[in-house]
Structures are given as C-alpha cells and as structure tokens.
Amino acid sequence: MTETVHPLWPAPYADGPVGAKITVPGSKSVTNRALVLAALASEPGWLRRPLRSRDTLLMSAALQAMGVGIEETVSSTTTGGSGEAWRIIPSGLHGPASVDVGNAGTVMRFLPPVATLADGPVRFDGDPRSYERPLGGVISALRALGARIDDDDRGTLPMTVHGGGALEGGSVRIDASSSSQFVSALLLSGPRFNQGVEVRHVGGVLPSLPHIRMTVDMLRAVGAQVDEPETGGEPDVWRVSHSALLGRDLTVEPDLSNAQPFLAAALVTGGRVTIPDWPERTTQPGDALRHIFTEMGGSCELTTTPDGTALVFTGSGRIHGIDIDLGEVGELTPGIAAVAALADSPSTLRGVAHLRLHETDRLAALTKEINGLGGDVTETEDGLHIRPRRLRGGVFHTYDDHRMATAGAVIGLAVKDVQVENVATTAKTLPDFPQMWAGLLGV
Image (tube, rainbow, N blue to C red; front, side):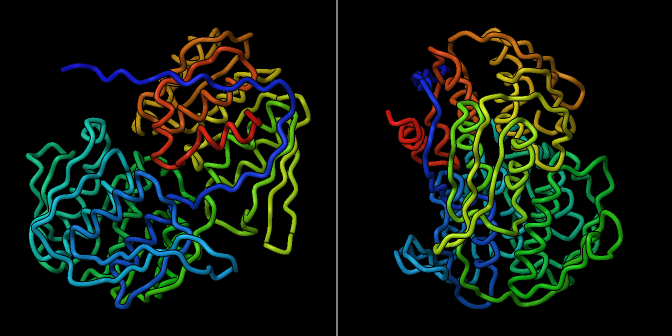
C-alpha cells in the first residue's frame, strides 16, 4: 500500500500585529445534532446557516441514504440577513443503506441509534482511522436496549445495524469515559425509543461535559423531556422520555472552537480580532477561550452591535504559560498547546487523556511536532507539560487532524519557515481555512 503524500503549505509569518474581523462558519456540533433531531421529528424543520464541511455533509448524506429529505436553499435567517438554509423533511427511515462516516465521531456514534429505528439493515464504514476510534460503548448499549448489530465482535467499524423499525429502549449502563458522544448518541434518539432511555455512566471521569449539556438543551428545544444531573437529577444519569419531537427553525451559532486560531493570532501577534455573532449564552466548549486566552495574556470584550453581539479579543504582546484542566474542553488543547509553546513561562495541560483516541493521538502528535521544531514538550499521564524554547522552521505534520493543522498555522505566525503538511484536512470543520488565514494576515 502506497502512503499518501500530502502537499506542504507555507504557514504565513506575521510581521506585525494582526487586525481583522473574522466571520466564523456555523458550529459542527450544533449542525450535526440539529440534523439528527430534525430527521427524527414529527414535522419538517429548518436549519439556517449550517456548517458546510466534510463532517456535516457526511451526516447529511447518511440521513438521506436512510430516507430523510434534505433540501438545500438560501433564505433569510431568524436574526436578519440571509444565508444557506437546509429544510429537513423526516420520513420513514429505511434500509438497506450504506453510511460513510469518514473520520467523524458524531456520524459514527450518533447514527447507529438512529439506524435501529430504520426498517432494514444499515451498514457503517469509514476512513481507516475510524476503525481505531472507540465505538464499543455505543454498540454494547444498543444491544442491551434490544438492537441487533453485526461487528464481528470487534466493537469498532465496519458494522451493520439491523434496524427493526423501532427499539424498545429502557435503562442501560455505559462507560463513556473515552467519549461523551456515547451519552449524546443515546439521548438524541432516546425520545423515539418505545420506553425512552435512561443512560447511566459507570466509568471514570466523563470528558467534554459541555457537549452533553448542548445535547440536553437541544433536546428540550424540540420538546423532549430530559432529566439530568445539573438540574437536580441523579449524578451521572440522564433520562429521556418517549415523545414526539417538534420540527423547529434553528439558526446555527458560529463554531467557537473554530474561532480559536484567529483569537490565538491576536494573542501571538499582539493584535486585535473581532468575531461577529458570538453568543451571550452558549453550551459550546469554545466559549471557554475568552477566559483561557485572557489568562494567557490577552483581553476580551463582548460588545453589542446593531447586528448582534461580537467578541473583540486583543493581545498584549506577551504570552503567559498556564496550568489548567481541559477535561471539559479537550478539543481546544491543540491550539492552546501551540500558544503555550510560544509563551514566556511553562504550561501544564491536564485532564485530556481521552485525546489519545481522537482523530489522531493528539497528545503524541503535539509532542512530536512541537519538539520537531525545537520545542520541549513532555507527555504526562493525562496531558502535556510544555516548556517554551526558541523554535525553528520545519514541517509540522497533521495526521489528517484538522486541529493539528490550525495549531501548526498558529506557530507559523511567530516562527519563520513552518510548513504545515496537508492543511486541506481543515475542511473537516473549517472550509476555506487557508484563504481565511491569508485574509487575516493580509497576504
């Protein structure tokens, strides 16, 4: 087998402070949850300003393969202006169908529960890396709830879900310590199970809790009844009652995690970046960047404009190290590590052992690539210890991981002659990143 050779992208070097207004595309996490909920609804719905990226298009194609109608158009938004809009028309889910998950965690985990409701078999396959990512928790939970799944006892892809048109549901115990998506996957389809679903987490520390909060909020917004720990429920237990789901008209928030490299650019160069439409209240993990990057040396202000709220972030010209538990916001780790490698003091990033099971082993990848540029990064049991060093140019490999690519671009702002391998992998969640980056720097 011949290894794919990817082109090298010369990461632009910043000669001075950046200053720009960056419109960030919609949230992948919101878009893909909204697609699933709309597909399971009892009436059509609208999804406005969805993210159009590899992950969301894989989700859309998979749902259409199972019989859901999705019409793409351009229309006005609920907050004014215009943009892309998808009309989702639920119908009887059916097989046989084939689903390509790519390397999208939301597709490979959220859709097997949906497939149990289809009338017929649904086969799931994906990129080679998808075979290595945790899925056994979802498979075993669905079997406990009454599903029939053929995976040759691997607990991974490829596999076939034999949909019976319905699933009995009920109570299930699951270890979701490797991915909070295991919990979200069961909750999203839970209202359509005959007995609803009760998900009891029985493993170690549950990572990425904001994503479960997002799932709960979005379920409630379409009429589901959810009992969960944060509103007085039993610790580590989520219950969703059987009910019909409403179609709704949703405008997708900007993806705040994808705003990270642009905010980092302001921090690294001592510049200023404005992100329009930053929500005043959100369950997105990326909102934590306001506090994290402020602690690392910047300042931010959430302003109100005639068009809505905007975040203005300003760098001070200095970057400070940080000691922080990122367990709830692990997806931010690559960008924070890139900034920390350029800081004036050491950093310790904790609580992210689960990142070894993401698009790549992010802890190993960050250690290897930053050290390859002359850095001093050490893997710990659950994170990274970063001691800043004078970095040099070189190739920053991405391992087909979009957040590795943007991390390399951030380092390239301050280090000449950094080349990012396969920057095109950013299309997973941030289409047109190279052009947006060039626009930020005026090149």
